[in-house]
Amino acid sequence: MPRIVATALKGHLDDFPAHGEEFLFRNAKGESIHSSRFYEQIWRPAIAKAKLSKGTGPHALRHAYASLLIAAGESVKVVSERLGHTNAAMALNIYSHLFPESEE
Image (cartoon, rainbow, N blue to C red; front, side, top):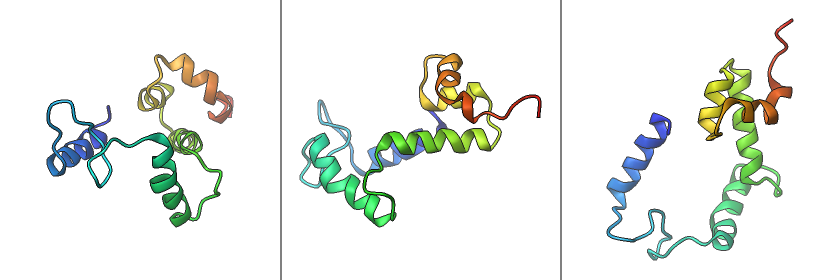
């Protein structure tokens, strides 16, 4: 897990401590966040506020993140680790078209 994620998660746990078997991320009522409610109450309003296409899903943002890492010159290994792939070959299979040609 990247340090920035660990730091953000620690901050979240400091503000919203979980006890026993409570869910780590909860809604304002302290209940678990179901995917249908998440999309309706959180995701879609965030997409609208960011002025992104209504059809933009988490996978599109993941792909954009990978694209930005590659464009910034990150190695296949780093991209693979950041995306949680089991190995660099998996990242290459998915994102190889985005890596610059070595001959250039």
